Length: 115
Length: 112
Image 1 (tube, rainbow over the protein chains, first blue to last red):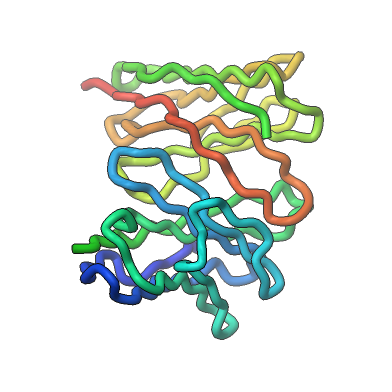
Image 2 (cartoon, rainbow over the protein chains, first blue to last red):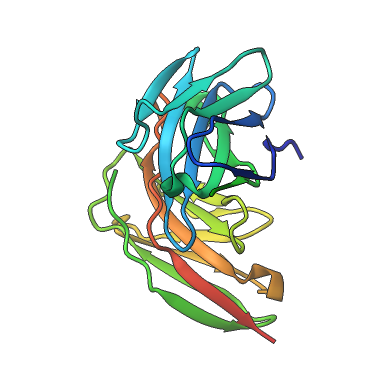
């Protein structure tokens, strides 16, 4: 079964450092997402991306965050200057064409610890 | 997207059916009901979704009431590996990249 893969599975970074989280969505999927989950809290939407541009973003997704699809297979989330409160599990997700019921499939997550 | 209400927690005996209810009384005609689960901080796993008809797949069945104001996810023979948080989410499923809004879900514990 095709799956969304994410790297790294766990990253520890110093406050103020830049972090890039990487994702390989399911091939032939067109929509890409990032979500995050702070320990013990709900899964929160960050951003969705389609046709090389952001479709939706939440209030969490401020100027410190950016997304990119640098080639035909990867989708990245960059945090420019990490803060302690960015410590969370970050989930990448993808979905296919919108007219087919559009199920979103999630990766296993990248756990980011900011120290 | 419409809001959903789920019980905070439920227990189920291993091998028995687990019936997880969800209330979505403000659902609109073009909104689907989706179910996901999350096993201990792993990525949310898609289970099933439906619009108005009952649906069944290899994982579960989804029963939607005729007025669409509530639904039940049924795991026919629960195993210990089904212990997870189950999320009922209502979402417009057409148009551009509509995201999922997760609530607190139901913590299902399958007991041996």
